[in-house]
Image (cartoon, rainbow over all chains, first blue to last red; front, side):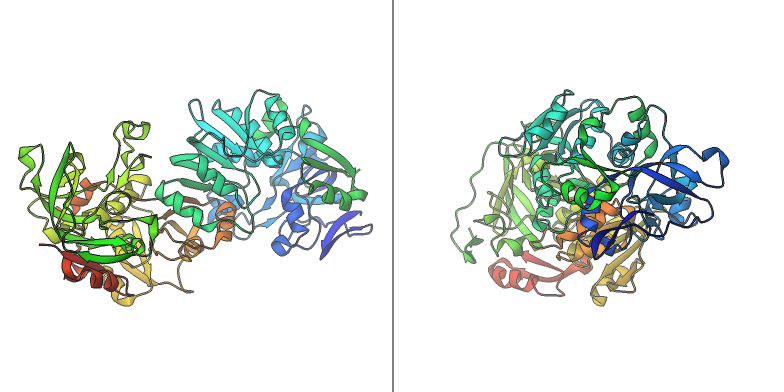
Length: 317
Length: 317
């Protein structure tokens, strides 16, 4: 099959072996895949990954042990857990220490014609959710994870820091909680997407308002945590989404002095993400910057890493 | 009056002006003062402080507007808040942005014959609490702060990292919650104090058990957070007590991936601390390494900063 393969560098391979089907797995023909910041990091060596990157996708089930699933349009959860350890038994499958992760850790991913995933990981896409929208379920679920970790609602003064892909999705999701929301970023043109749907926006800088109860840090930058600490109130909460090589380490003293809570936040629940797309309470269409065919995947990843670009999709079939 | 004064360097001043009494303040004759890690940092320039350091004390009220208080043995809360801002009105006086802090920020402290504090900050010491023990109320309150921030109880697997002054006090306090507790440090002889009262102890290193629900980081060292992240379980909680100039900043990626909560923790409630000393549920006597007269304060601070030394007291009268 055709696949983008990372092995020291990213390359297009025309005869990469199609994945073999293990017990309880489904074979999925990929329709669209999304390029995520993690994919860009992987092409720089993150996680020491070798193989097919890509973990945001929509596709069609071509083979699996459950006949009713064949032919269904699906997306899938990316953590392949053991199902038997303490974490799996307590419902914390995304934290299974034995897990592999689609396109990120020891498991070939979605930048290819086919992928496999356990049937339990699959979610059928409703008719109202297009193939392109299906790619957004995984990052949207990561935004919904925040609502499962902290209380946000009417009266909460919340800020989202960062106007990249995850920042915009997170702002759209937090808005659903009815909180008083400000989206803070560096790019007028990206923030305009949020402004158009009635979200208050601000350019990061000295004029920023402070005193937020909750700040979600989605900047993808080393200085993001420092900015979050500038604008969170004492005893407030920072939700940390950014993983990055270098941060200002002394900033944590401010977290101690102001008794700030910092909560790490990663993968989230697919169901509310799919429901939000189905009900059109979240609009992801303005986030698509460009669609490339799989064969132009190397160019697509390079394009996605440019400043100002939002979501880049790979069209596989 | 006699006072230890920091102004570029620490010096003993024999004729330092006694503090003037403002409205609602009490004049307190200091009996004992404790040397804290923060005092040692102040003598290295921390907070840009100039004046009399010291914030852990016991003393006797010599003058104030409330006649019933005169002659009482007291200790006092160290944050002098404005009483009028949003934080003060919501009961978050320790986070008042206008606050000064006894012996730490714009307010002369306890390494002197006299100090002043607002009457509202004072707590009368019961007869069962000695002058020496009274010095421990403030750091003990900082340990009790943890119990007001997170749920700890039967079934909680908790670890205290660090066997310095605060680490030992924290372990004694966490034990009161009935949790399953391990105190982890570097010094057999300090951990022996906890072992003697039935607390499980371990030397930091490769053999450490992991999977703790809660880890309280009291190491005072840059690598403490990294060790805490090694032994906390996914979705567990780290209570961060250490303020330090340098930390490994990349470690926060592990907090994101494992969805760990990090809670900054500072000053705490005096009442449960005084009650614990009164009821003898916490024993601070083994923590006193040495008592110096105020006149030997420079030597005392130097001695307190040596490795292996626990609490150093200054006897003022």
